Image (cartoon, rainbow, N blue to C red; front, side, top):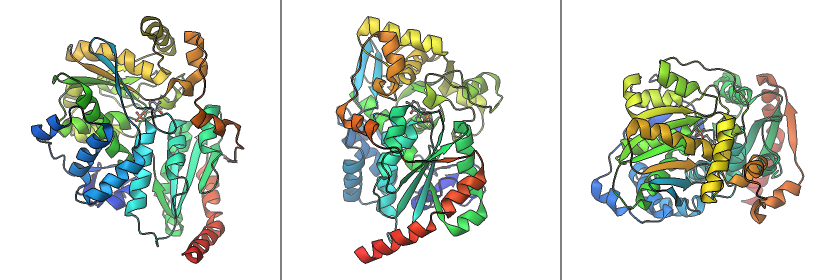
Amino acid sequence: MKYVSTKGHSPPTNLLTALTEGIAPDGGLYLPELFPTLDSTTLHRMKGLPFSEVSRIISQHLLGGELQSKNLDELIHESLNFTTPLCEYQKDIFGLELFHGPTLSFKDVGARFLAHLLDFLRDKDDQPLYILVATSGDTGSAVAQGFFDKEGIQTVILFPSKGVTPLQESQFATLGGNVHALEVSGTFDDCQRLVKSAFLDHELNKKIKLGSANSINIGRLLPQIFYYFHAYGQLSADRETLFSVPSGNFGNLTAGLIAKRLGLPVRGFTAATNINDTVPEYLNTGLVRPRKSVPTISNAMDVGDPSNLARIEYLYQNDLANIRRDIVGSVHSDEETRACIRKVYESTGKILDPHSAVGYLGIKSGISRFGPGPSVFLMTAHPIKFRETVEQETNCVMTVPESISSALSSKRQVVPIGPNVSELREFLLGQPQSRQKHQSNFQEAN
Ligand SMILES: *Cc1c(COP(=O)(O)O)cnc(C)c1O
């Protein structure tokens, strides 16, 4: 399978190049060249299968040309070693729990798969790869954990100072080793802009090899397709499903659109956002107005200029009417989100994190546009990650799972930088000595 750029001015490329470049030379984002439809027998075979099995079938379908099936098995076994259960909230309304990975966020799915895939495909004798990632919280933790200790890969996490929770920060800033945390005095959009300019900086790219692990990376999108099929596999009925996707950069939703393209029976999608509503506004008005992000209680979705909109437009050939046939927008304030957490807790005893609550709220718009039937909202984070908000609304006291509490007391190691490219360059170019050392140690060890 070749990968093409959404801008169409770069030649189709192979998977490894698409994974390491992250962004295409023409500034576009990579997508598979083809979306081969799954036959209905294969689709039905997924009913009742565990997440790992469903992932094996879809990855075989998409990546079978690049990796042998025993390698794919190993990849999935190592990276997707948790599950994505579906839980019923009301008749025909289900939450898809995507937060059972090591950082309790759905981003573990994409980040771990990408890290293992890159590790698998890369030539170990190559020069070190610098993975650059902008994060508003969850990406940083998931990527840091996914890439930690991967040979020949340095991971650089850019995060907005004051923009992430202490728990999130503890998950990427305490690892050390090949994981570097850069605290940017600015917003998430500044971090994202810095990463983009580093990739477009020809001088810098001549000196060091950069790679990306943001949701622009196709290696993160691909495994996210798997859990849409796993959701379908867990539904007893064979009716078309509505998916309500709490969205920020829109990678998650894009993966759903691809799943539909591959043959998943879908009624429609809700693009559910907090008040950072660039995409819902576009769906309503046809105008794309990127803007500064506004802070909310669902901070992982505070994105004013969502990169994956380029992929959505490409998938629908820039035809807004076509996009509207599949996606409806739904915008929710912090007040609504808080009220939703309260209401769901009172009526079901279940606790939603603020992002999942936005997804839950989006079901209503989805049903009014696409009609009744099985409806799944994607649950993108464990409520403990947004403990303060959740405890306020439910009056519950939550305990931090043992698996992540130890990081909270570990020592943070961060490097502060200003919101400008030159400081980022300086940091990256200040690394070569340790890189050389790393390399020679590595050779000696071999
Ligand atoms: C990143 C994130 C989102 C948004 O996902 P996108 O793919 O960027 O739209 C939603 N919820 C949580 C908890 C996240 O970490």
